[in-house]
Amino acid sequence: MIWLFLISAIYPTFAQLSNDPNQLQNWCLDAKHHKSKPGPEDELHKQCVPWKERACCTANTTRHLHVANLYKFNYNHCSEHRNMSESCRRHFMQDECFYECSPNIGPWVVKVSMKIRNERFFEVPLCASDCNAWFDACKDDFTCSEKWTDLIVKDGHLTPCHNQNECKTFADVFKTSKNFCEKIWDHSWKYTEDTDPCMRIWFDGSKGNPNDRIAQYYIQTLLGNDAVSNKLFDWLTITVLYLIANVLI
Image 1 (cartoon, helix red, strand yellow):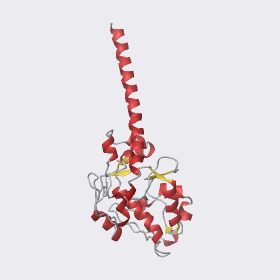
Image 2: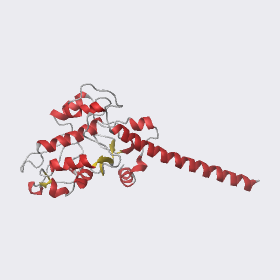
Image 3: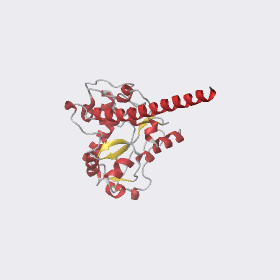
Image 4: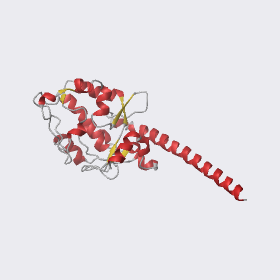
């Protein structure tokens, strides 16, 4: 499975797992806490409420996400310096809500082999303003790694920082918001200017989910390109068969 992940990392558009637009628009990750298909959830908890009309998460999952720790990941892994600030934690919570609840990730799903999931999303276009706000809220907090997936061992637990002296501020470790958003979860996100089609992790769910139309845009782009490729392939096939037929005659 390592080679598959590496290929998807280099050629993410080739990792498209379906040509069904409905499936791509309603994709729940094959992962530990996700539903098999999205649907309404009236009791989603706190920051996950914006996804309640069409969610891949259950109310129980969102409650545990807020009050416990779904994956035993310790956000306070540099606690000798200080615990993560509340403002920074809120942004990571919103990121978790997107991960657990969003059905709009179909075009970016790739296969992985992990205890907690068989799929992940790769290079989802995250709006620059959301990324900038996230980094700004966390820049004075501490971490010992720029890629947090390296801190997680196979059972989902966090490998603690071996030396608290390795801990530095997010600003020192990542330097820029783009570097932060793209590296921290191993390129789950791709920093994208707000003027381009991009996903929001913060939005007012009472006004609908703006990520629906963004997913639709990328699905149409993907399937449109496939349609062009298929037509070209069909034309080449017909041409070759015609030439062969003429040679045989």
